[in-house]
Image (cartoon, rainbow, N blue to C red):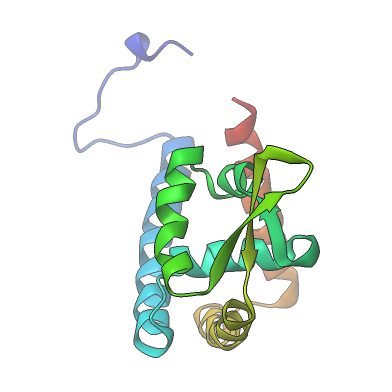
Length: 157
């Protein structure tokens, strides 16, 4: 699709595709605001910090190569370095070098990071359940699959 062939529609109807993208953006804003506020109040974390710690917890030995973490989080290598620095200073994450290859660096959860993530995870679960309290298991599964499909289509471009 060539964007030069699209007529702007100020205040007019939008395509179903744009409507989905706008709804995703609005939903992300609302959910992030809710999770950011709660996590910051109780644990001093942003939702972004929580996501990084969660990604690390999913890696073997609670660690990931920094480049892999950057990709999962949608950041550049320098972006992940800047994002991890405050977590490293707090002692939640540590930098580890690969002994056989000095070019490879890992980010790993520390014991303090695992403990804080455990508490933050409980809170994030509570908020998620509250946000989606009126959804059936089938609706949740369908929504999760639809969002995964959108993410896959966006990454394929």
